[in-house]
Length: 225
Image (cartoon, rainbow, N blue to C red; front, top):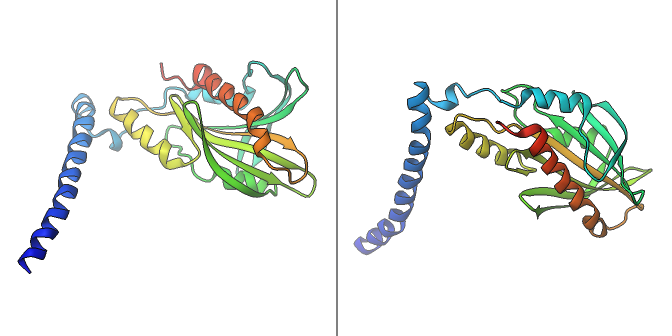
């Protein structure tokens, strides 16, 4: 019995130490913000500095280098309105980009992908996450009875992006410790393909557009200073 108890203590000890280290890092990260403001950052988080540029994005869209915007309009999706831009490049390749920017400092990403799938009556499969430069995107196939699409989507913020809201939440907490916020935009890049075609050949077309959209958002919309 004593031997088993000793082994149990040896197994638990590293977990306790790790927990203490993580707790200490959180406290050290939060302490400067607390000292400066007199209260914990997450009880009174700072305002999102990019709200004005986010509103302009929702109203006017953005110019995407290497692509011509042939049509743009504010489109109802679910209970919200998105900016929809129809694009075309020099090879006559056509694509659609949908933007749903954060509107208020308290807004958090939640069900944007479910809203999008439902509003378009999409069936989807082939879901997977891929890394492209500084961001992770969800890569999937979507289709209706009339059209099939290769889709990449993610939540964009200033220094990265990811399709899972929890990743934005972590980045926003880190930003709050530095008296900033991680402004976000839900982005979906959509490329028409042949009916029920494999999406892998479309990856080489989508990735450069995704990277251009992310860098344009970072430089023109999401910067906090």
